[in-house]
Amino acid sequence: MHLTCTVVKVVMVVGMLMVMTPNSDALSGKTPPGPGLLGSFTQLKRVVSDFFRSRSAAEMISEKEGGLYQLNLGLSKICFINSRGFRDEAFLEKYHLFSDRGVESNKKQLPEELMQWRGTIRDNGAASEEARAFVNSTLKETSYLRTTVETQIEEAIAFFDDELTGAIPSDLVVPKMIFREHVLDVMTRIAFDTAGHRNTISGQWQFQKFFEDVDALSNSVLFQPGFISTVLPNTKVDDYETNLVGVAKYLKERAEEAIYTNRETSLVQRYSDFFLKRESSIAQPEDGWRLMYDFFTAGVNTVPEVITWDIYYLASDLDLQDKIRQEMKNFGTDVTYDDRTSLPRTMSFLTEVHRLRPVATLGIPHAASADGTIGGYAIDKETLIIPNHWAMHNDPADWQSDPQVFDATRFLKLNGNDLTFDSDKARIVTPFSVGPRSCPGQEVAAGPSF
Ligand code: HEM
Image (cartoon, rainbow, N blue to C red; front, side):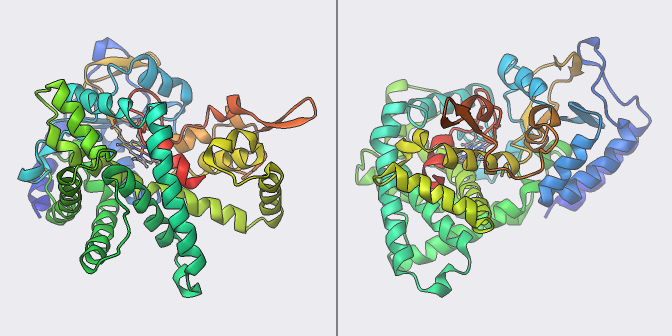
């Protein structure tokens, strides 16, 4: 690990910076509230030590000075956004300034064979726009979602049902593992048009290894591009690389197999066709697996996390369970995702879980691609922008006096005598973030959790 060396370099640079003025003022404006240079390092230590309990880090940050709060770490700056107004200004109105992921040194973390990333999560500017163009023509496109994604999800759910029915009780002791297998199955069907289940000896081994690598990557979140590398540029962590390569190899093999056997509805085949027609100098037709890497690492932990919270709240309130079961029974036929608008109680419950337990509590960091302002405060180029979804979902201005109480009826309203789902209120719950850089997997995530 080259971390020690980097830390020494950083300590020296920081020492020099301590005698310099804390902030340079972009566009000569006032800088956002924050603790200045020395205080920022103390704060960062707390944020980092709390990061694995990101909710407490989020609470701590939002206790501070309101909607915007900035740590000044010498040349690096981290600006936390705690209010919807500022978040919308940055990610919607000024998306052209605040939609990058970060400094180029992010990529230096990657092993040689993965350097040309061309995925979505890590890329900036034109590269990320190309990836989004493909995503918008598939995962955000209604007819593709209807004809392909929903069919794949339904097949995966039928498979999941059979598995649960045939499971022996000891298989059910770690529910999150079962949900993860289900989500991996959904994603493998969409990406490669083949079931994701471990039905062969080599498949079993790969499957197990894949989860170990994904877990290790999630646990080393601090070393992932976009966070620590902004503060400690050029940091390389060997274990992180090993896991990264492990996941990448698994997905690359599956992608090659899908393209070799010409599985037309697989997402990697579509990617290939899309970029063959487009003649891009950045994205290449054979790069679909890189995008799948982003999808899998973004999806296989987040969705099971949400399902686990859903089950937790249902299991701890039998009355709620009965009401939701009754609503489905009253609906009559086998309920599908398309029927959700007729199930206000179910929708209100699911939205409340997203509100109170946003799995990406602090989102994925954005970065300022040029000097700009948010809320009149000056934001320097390359400042890391972290949206605090937890604070937004607990803002008393939106949720009256009880934002921290779980209330499954929060999004219900009376329309005449009918109980309906309050979709206007639900719109301010944004676990997938907002704007052009928001989560492209929202619909894929919603299907299996519904
Ligand atoms: C409940 C589950 C999920 C939640 C709460 C969630 C949330 C998020 C959030 C907050 C972001 C950052 C958006 C931003 O930077 O403004 C994000 C990005 C992303 N998500 Fe999800 N996500 C979920 C599931 C998924 C799934 C299933 C997929 C893949 C099919 C996926 C793929 C991605 C990708 C590729 C990005 C990066 C987008 C970019 O950089 O342009 N996510 N997600």
